[in-house]
Length: 507
Image (tube, rainbow, N blue to C red; front, side, top):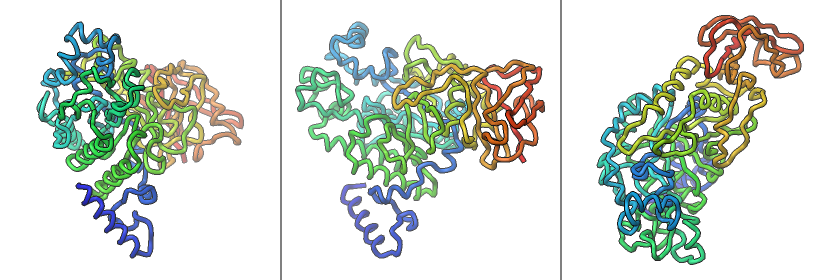
């Protein structure tokens, strides 16, 4: 939509509001306008999002070609004297002769199969999924008329986002597009004091002697090196609106540095996304890190994060399947399924949702190491999904010695090592069932004293317990509720090696 068109829309809506008996935009059932008062009428966490619990996405782009370092390779390769710069020049030549743009023709994606990928996400248990639509590097993974550096026009020469969205929608999986390009804007070209600070306040480092200082009009867009930062801010917005118009995502997710985008542009983006939801009669969601979007409007995301206790608002953490990196790196090690699932259970017990990242190779192969872990996660979710999907937190999250700590950025608390002594709870929305998770393998024949939910003055379930079953094998277990504790006798069976779940059937 042109700037004139947006202004006209705002004027028309404002006149409409002034002529009605209510000031609530939501009650007009027409449009949101880019003001906080209007945007706060949007429901941040609709039921489908609270029910979903698990989403999946992937870091994949030209930076996957070198398969070295991290997803910050595009920036680090231009940092003269750095390890990545030296490695790059040893393998590809000087940055003046082989720049980041030269990786794009090598980003072939010939093995990318959106149908098979959508099947994999579904089998893992994801209820929403999608790509990193644009990372810090400025390369768009959709068929863009706004950004000349896009996957449909170069590299793979196909609409990665559009093709995957089509496959996801066939399976009734909600669609996600993540945007990391707020940091792409070069804000230091006129600040010599920052030239030697390795990209401070921008993704690509700037120095007049670096290729990132190019004056080529097209290359400047890749490096975010606009003459006027306000032009970049509009470019940031135009790309998001293009994805909303063309692909109708259910969820928009933003990485760090959204605070570098002016508030009026963020509000325009939010109104555009929310109005698209109204247009298509669906509830859409927006997520951001560091509370860059007010909590009344969007979901707060903690990167690799966790919380010490139940959070009153639904929240999210994005975690990666690899030990540390987000993109595919040769020789990278991956977390085992037990570690991932146990950490996810901790998040779910505290009112959180998990966004799990995987790392495809540049040719579109998701390697077997990752597939093996995803298969184990999916198998566990298939058996115990009832205790996850559509549930809500209990009065307390649980108990135990191991616990995640609040982390606002890269807290690595997604690597907490839990044991069967760590217990977590969820409750069905209808409160007819409660679920108890042992984050490990309990000892067969052992009597567990669960004082956390025992006794008449403690955190009793929503209604009296009728029966308790061991999920997975669906057998009753012996139990007794005393004034002091809930006594559970664990049966002599083979337990799931990832996590054991009990179902408390309530009156």
